[in-house]
Amino acid sequence: MNQKERMLAGLPYKSWLDGLSDERLALRKLTHQYNVFPPGDRQEMTNLLKQIIGKTGEDLMIEPPFRCDYGSNIEVGNNFYANFNCVMLDVGKITIGENVMFGPNVSLYTAGHPLHPTSRTSGYEYGIPITIGDSVWLGGSTVVNPGVTIGDNVVIGSGSVVTKDIPANSVAVGNPCKVIHTVTEADREFYYRDFKFDVTDY
Image 1 (cartoon, rainbow, N blue to C red):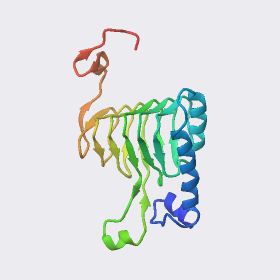
Image 2 (image 1 turned 60 degrees about the horizontal axis):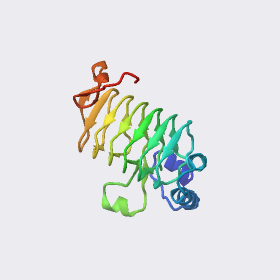
Image 3 (image 1 turned 90 degrees about the horizontal axis):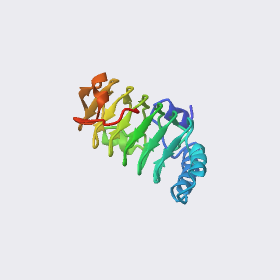
Image 4 (image 1 turned 45 degrees about the horizontal axis):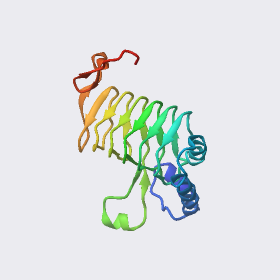
């Protein structure tokens, strides 16, 4: 296996070998172009974003600036939105479902380094996939660590650090992130805490 194959298999690999540096440089040029794109032409921005991200659905928007390692290892479903300063370290696969929203400063980290200092200074690193289900909202400044799966219909509170899987239909917050509420049909009539909707078209 070459270093890219090892990287995508979740094995220890060296990030400067076998053309990986060249791939990251090519991606940096695309994200730079995206991040300085004049505001106003959303279709052109979407077209460029589809060159950056490996697989997308329709109707996606990532507010600049946006950073990632390769882009090709990211898959997003229909109706995806990420606010400013999104970071996706996609040395491992990142899979995101449909109708997903990220607040500002959300970071997904598939990348990691060995715990022992001797192992770490050897230059080996690794990537473990992250999976995010459908209809998920990650609040601002959320960090998702390697290997995490977030289920469908989950809300993660702002400032959370997600280190373990979060089950579907949950509200989870904190560092480390923990489930504090299960989303039920009763939640439908509220838009924020105990504030009830005064409209019916939702």
